Image (cartoon, rainbow, N blue to C red):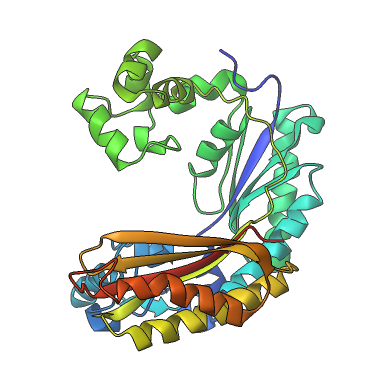
Length: 362
């Protein structure tokens, strides 16, 4: 079985990152269950949870949970005599600053760093030759991160990106899990199939129909059986269940789009209100574009979601480079008008969410 051709890969995952930054910066939150997301509005909020700290997760609160449900879980816990959750609106600038500080520290410990998100990244430690040396190296890195930022991370070390990623989730928070090539199979077999990256609820449901609950169960299926039932994803599933991953680390692709979206407090068919919200988004997007040192864009993408959750996306691409907020506002207005003039929305359904995005950045 090939799991990485002698490589030593570490995956760094910042623990409950947004919530941890808030706890660090706001001492009154210490010991409380913390939820980062939109305003729950007393149980009537319409957004979702961005993340929750480990205390809040004990209540069943997790990322992408509707905020009104998170509020309900918090209230149920409060009635049982437990602490109610502190609901905090996201502060992305502070989170970005903290992430930058941490990964600047990480970069000192490795010649190769691939940051895959604001709160995670992978490094190649093959130059250290042994997994024992890699463990000591990462322990030193974790201590420096904690000392300088007062934030923790969990790290997985393995022979490839896949195993390192799974290992980073194994012992949270502030964990360090090392899986050598000879231990990969023993490590993977008892894990839930949901611990394999890419196996989501739908795939899990289908696998459970075959009485497959663990990675060990999944290993019993041949790649032909998996391909028959899951198409091209079947062979990938076959390899992942065996810890096989030949992907190299590479520099992240530069960001090629910037966008925002807004879920309204109430569904609306008020065009002026929607235009006002799009104008605010346009100003924020062009400001972000300038901060990131892009000079312009050529594509504008609009997303409209109705109260019944049907969603439409429309876009326009120009031959000339657009640079200014007014240009973005004009294109957004042109794209959204058909949804209020009966062309794209003859039933005059109310709008739940709008999103605006620029692409083909220059």
